[in-house]
Length: 305
Image (cartoon, rainbow, N blue to C red; front, side):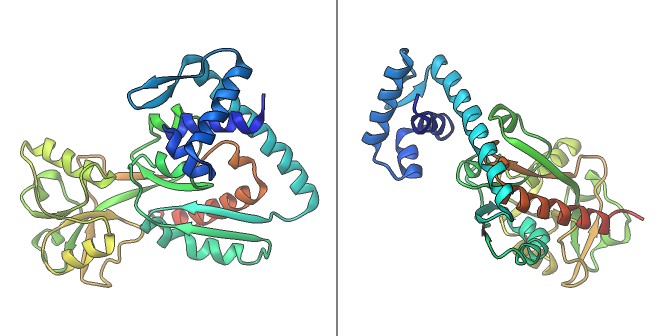
């Protein structure tokens, strides 16, 4: 079987439509469909079937798509051996990460990698279309994700997952707020406050849902924003309280006070996600090494005394 056709089947399994595969591989949809039909003839069994207006993989197609992953990993491993033999890692590595991860990691990471002239890192901090980050992994070599734990969708997809550290998420108050006198806050302390939240189903929103469940009534969420900087500004302006990550919230620098939240789980896991074949590339491994070192430094810097 042709390796390139196997890769198209794998892309279909992960992207979900012929149109998406065509866009990702710079082909026309008809060209993708034609190559999949050739692969089906080579396999001797149906690999796809009609589903609504599109295609989905049959059981045989799903099994062969998994085989395509194994083939891609083996090829990347072979390339990695050769690249390491030739010398320092080279090429372009694409990294997708969210805003606060960019704040934490990228100054140190990019300064470190700037010493390698043959290695170029291209970063993207756009919000993911889905909060499980799956839609980003198909298009980027490295994805930095935040979640409340390792998600089943990640393991089901067979991704390479590298946990970095767990970061507390604190209640953020304006300086002078009546609750600032407390060292920690419970759901009952904060349930009747006006809140600045995040979009529904974003990771931090789960904490608001858990607080509401603990006290038996919904929170008064006045506004919802993705950008932590906007949330900080609104809280500092006295327009509400919020949940924000501990390591990047500029407490006291702009009129904020942070307090830990007790009684509900209030933390996030930061992880690296990769396709297993891309994880074999020396250039990708070098960027991952740099991110991991920076994560270790940040975690140690913020460790409780």
